[in-house]
Image 1: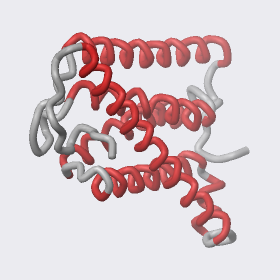
Image 2 (image 1 turned 45 degrees about the horizontal axis):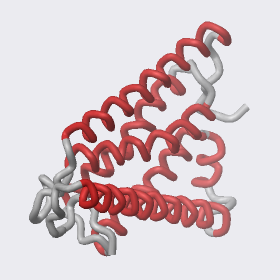
Image 3 (image 1 turned 30 degrees about the vertical axis):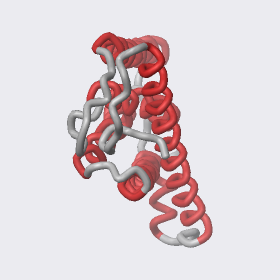
Length: 194
């Protein structure tokens, strides 16, 4: 079983091999959470098509893609929390922090879509791409300070590089907003399909 922050772990040495082992465990745990999120998304879409097809909820989902996207994100978050709590035995605090880290990118990207600055596809694609770096940054930053027991020992420079990387990605997204605004004007992002 992989060790993730928010779960008890034994202390590895401070030599490079111990660092590589810890980094590998963090990467493996992150991959597992992403798979859990994708399973939640799959379950949501299967239920939407097979169980809820033809209902008012399905009509609302297709009429308002932002609403539909946020319902899918909620399903992904629930699946991730269930996986973290029952497989990794993560604390509720860490589950909450990871959920917030997961929700920040779609929340940030929803604003320009609602203001008709960018098309809905920007939210649909961008939030999925930015969730993982946001979650990885939290894992690097927090280590296991909020966990049940020991400190993972992630070097400070790795945390700083992770945070700088996330800031660089967000700046790139902002520049894309600006470029799209100058080239296409407004009126692209709509709450409803046309």
